[in-house]
Length: 189
Image 1 (cartoon, helix red, strand yellow):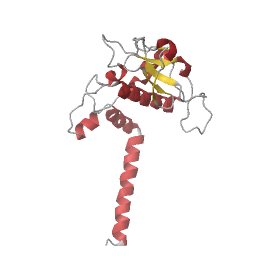
Image 2 (cartoon, one colour):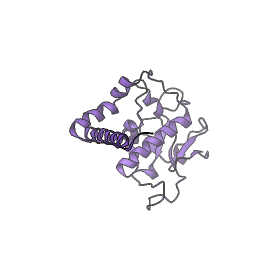
Image 3 (cartoon, helix red, strand yellow):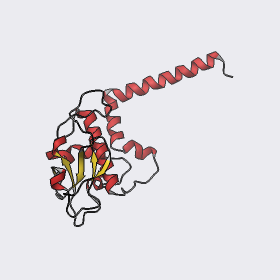
């Protein structure tokens, strides 16, 4: 059993390490460290794993885009403007272990033949605030409203109404992810 003196010494060393790391991380020189970390330079130096390829699936893409939307919501306080939603969330969906260009696959519907994106954002969610814990009043009366959905419009940053843009005939079940993160199938009109 360690002596009280050894315990105090160990806790003192841990405290010095934590304070030193905090000073490095949150100081001016720490910004350079954070930038290197964000761009994967530090991880690539300490990790021997190869970069992975993204395995696209409709539900996986919707979940990835939703997580990027939530990251945007957390930092900006609202969902992005639907006219530029993909541009706004693209950097929030990056992963440092993906090979170059792989993160862009998250925005392309794998069931779409002939290229294009194949996802759209619901205009009804554009610029609105959502509190998933419902501790604050948010802008949604129905958190099951589609947020991002499979779309007949295949351009980047496509947006509009899910009832008007749902593909006919349905493509891969016409999936959508709701404001609260639930995967649903859009009703075919």
